[in-house]
Length: 477
Image (tube, rainbow, N blue to C red; front, side, top):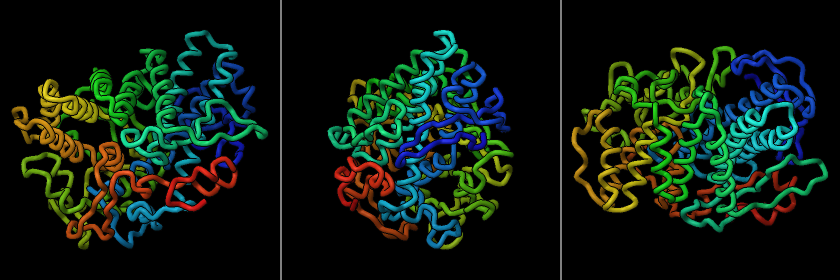
């Protein structure tokens, strides 16, 4: 969808002043006349169009940016120095963002736009001309989208839940704001997570089973997000439970499916962003930055130690094959990556949740519960290793060695999909880059370091005086 929502701004918190109406088909991109927010909830057709607008806000280029920044901060991949991409991700790679940097403002603004629009549904759907079942279904989708937005926000701007749940997170805004309403201060990390769980659990209970499109919130997608949230919180029994539920009916693809460029769904895609040839993010996609052929921005590389961690019989090693060569370089900074295709079409669908991630969540969550659960952990891990061609029997590792093996496998399976940095944070692992691995910026951050969270954007501090005394340590107001 084109960006057809017209949104009024009060500070950096967005209020829905009118929904852009469009045809009922979710994939239709031709807008009609914009209407005010009260009228937007006056008929089933207008409500359907309004929901399309919320999804539109949730699937823009900022989502790709957050995925890419997460990986470039994580250390397995790097951005080449002097990249011809208008300096995108250079600040994130070096951990030198400040209150005026584009990423802190963009992430804040984009996610609060989604939240503000979801809040309009929360307020208006109860009195709309829909059946009770329809009302619950709409609220399930919009509360899931709101929860996802808060999940991104609290991970970027708050300390990890596993490190300090009492730390400041982000403001909780759960109803539409008017121009005279008092803006909120930051809620505690634990309270933000409580709201995320509340929204996702409501969504799980109320989303109709008939909703099956991978480009919309489904029961499986919501369960996948719940698995992530519980893993991030260190609630391992629930993480494993929801990982198992999320992958029902979504079997792992073949090894060959890992080499098709991640532009079209395979059997294991659970949730994804849809892209069209006439409506896409162009050069601002994940595929563009990883493209090894200089067709896209072609700026991301695999660090030497990460590339060298793949066994010769690992089918995923073929994701580094460029012009017939596995392990090709262009310059001295890292290895070229061919996991994501940018050469076939400008419309690359972006996978958000795969069954492979769910197997790895299950494996990690079971292993972290101790020896009694290690058999289950090994079975889940083996599914990923067998598909990659690197194992035919369960691992012989136990204890921390098994956990380490799972985390290494997670990195090799999910790199480029936006996990590594947040994985380091939630596991309280130092963020360390050493010389000799292709990196041109060396860092050493211990868990809890001020630079591991983004600053609140200056625009928001200017708009909301309450937040001026709540800036993250290490950043000026």
